Figure 1 (tube, one colour):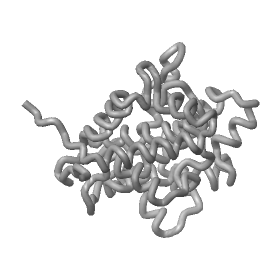
Figure 2: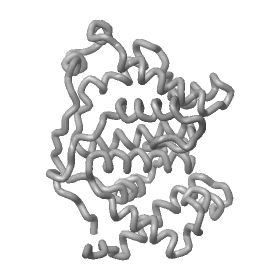
Figure 3: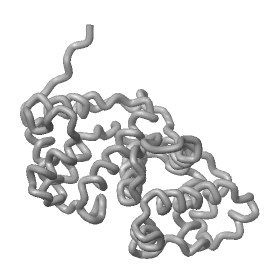
Figure 4: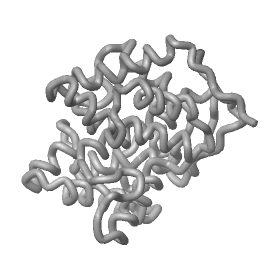
Length: 250
């Protein structure tokens, strides 16, 4: 059974913009990857990392305040978020160079955060969007936090991976999970069941030592990314059906 935590256990995590600014700062400081939160820079993975982080915030009842306007600014003011998605467009622009595509996106995040109140107010906004100007982030939770395993089981139930990560690629699914789990962690919530799930994958031999689920399941699926993702989701269901329970704390 799902081990849901109480609403009182959660605190307001950084907004997605704030988390991405930390990634950008780390990329500027370090000489080489892995980088904070995202590991090896991959545009598709980061795109789905943001999706997972946002979905977790949604479940937590978080209002990003003024930072909610970033996507509107990127799309309507900078005209830099085409219908195909920023990750796909920037990768094409830079001939498949993932670090450059990621940096371009993160530079836009920093540019947005540096805008003056007057520049933000000049954006084409509707009434609800305009009410966000100057609004700080806050949490207005209405339901218990949703653990990562519950999120995976919901994706499995829906059955349409495209809705969550776009193109079915294991690195995109891994990015979604990373973003989701980071949000839970920064909200001060434990995600112990997913840790036990990862250990179970290793203990049952599904993921050999020194491997990630991505490469292990991709190899098992003979390179079929969608099949590898479905294997992960099926394993999550099998793990949950085994009535795994937390180990008692001393």
